[in-house]
Amino acid sequence: MKSRDKESIVVESSCSSGTVRSHITVSRDLRKYFKYFEFWSRYDTEIFANTSILNIPVLSIVLPLAWVTGANVYVRDLDRKFAQSMDVVHREYMMYPGLPYNSNLVADRFVDNDYGSNETALLFSGGLDSTHSLFQNLPLKPRLIMIFGTADIPISNIAFQETLEEEYSDFAEREGLKLNFVRTNMLEVLNMRKIDHLFGSLSRFQRPERHVWRDHWLDYWIAMGYSLAHICQAAPLSTTRFNQLIVAGAMLSGLSLDELKTCKMKYDSEYVARKIAWANLRVIQDGNIGREPKAIFLKQFSDSNRVKLRVCLDCHLLYSKRKLPHPTQLNCNHCWKCLMSIAECALAGINPNECGFSVNRSTYDQIQNSLAGSRWEMIALWWKPLQQAIREETELDVNDSREFFVWLSRVNIDSMLSRLPPYSSPLSSIYHTLPYPIADILRKLIERIPVKLRCYADLALARAPAG
Image 1 (tube, helix red, strand yellow):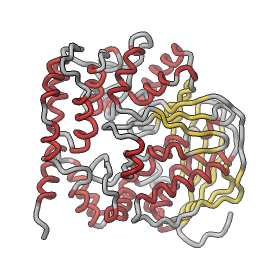
Image 2 (cartoon, helix red, strand yellow):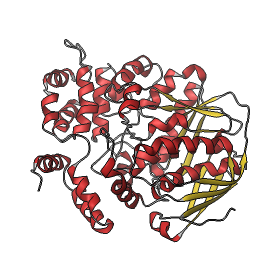
Image 3 (cartoon, rainbow, N blue to C red):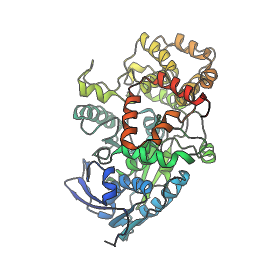
């Protein structure tokens, strides 16, 4: 490989028995950002040993880190179109002007790949967004790709993976669709908390005027890594199989794509999805509409297609602790994502009990109570659109939900928003001014505080006089 004279990351990949393995070598200054130096992605079908494509999954993990640290990335063989698309994605992330944008992707040999396939694939999680995209594009008969090794499907939780594999294999067979499962350790390679602290410390002084953060921390994975890593796990699978990959969008609060471009407000890293390419493949972002219209669209398919949604952020924890009322449970029915999805389904006229949830009258009391503990962005991006979708004289009463929707229609959402600090939190500013070990101790302590109390603390800090 070419000579290296600065912080560097070197990757080398190979394939055996359907598993892509990549060894990562880094300069001393970068070792603290890694937990492991072996990356792997395992596929349930034959994978071609084209190293220019096999290097794509691991590069999707290390490139965002290189962009944050200013490191160069070196590889022997690489697909030319992927390298060109990474230049485009790198420029997109110049929205964070505090980062050192002097990183280069260097290959000994660029390869022009073209496999001539005309089929379509779709990244499928079982959630509302990807299920909507599936039925929206059902005439294309897309190949479904489900990734195990994500934050909500940990690679270590075999029991949960087996439940999902059985449920969605049956579903795909009923629909006459191909389904592939990809298992990967992509979230175990990097020290995400340490990178979060670095990313926030560099970008906090010059952050865009409007930005949505998942929590009080400037989340590196959500802001820069998520979409790239998930999409690129499909690269080895795509060879000779498909040249179009559909990725479900998650447009919230009715924001149009033009509004996203204008105010540089990029929820997660999904805005760059359509910029990613390799060989003759192009990525198509689908479904840039709110969740309520998606639920209404799915109503026509929910009965005849017997589709079950998997939206939960916490269900894998139940499998780890073996706290399962049903051995094939897909959702915990108590986290904020479950509660919001239940409400969205009920408002669309879908019985949540028939699409993957377990709901009774008390569930709507839980949903009502969850509003009081919601952060500013959750109220603005989830609750307000849901309230706006309620018809004045709704006759729907799915699972005794009508009383809840009558209540929600009368809540003064704008008044609630005015009492909470928007988007980024003053707590995150304190966190990012401290050295990492101390900051991480503070973060662990704050994470133990209920969200509602954190919101009050944010508000007090935001209103405190300077000095």
